[in-house]
Amino acid sequence: MRLATCPKCSGRMEEGFVLDHTYGAYLQAMWVEGAPAKSFWTGLKIKGRIKLPVTSFRCSGCGYLESFASST
Image 1 (cartoon, one colour):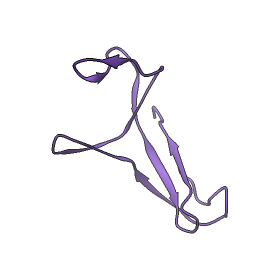
Image 2 (cartoon, one colour):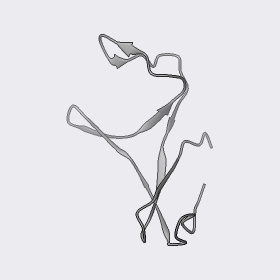
Image 3 (spheres, one colour):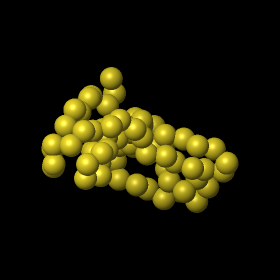
């Protein structure tokens, strides 16, 4: 998915991603299907769920963010 103009102010949209920082590593945020379920050991239960990387677009004019989790 590629956005050219901001749907709010018609400014230029820039592609990027939401950073996830964990235990000294930098990762790309992921979309996980379903409602969050707590896990004592890992914080959240995600085994067996669909997980997709999140790509975000930021307007250089107004700062509006639009995010996508595409499987393609």
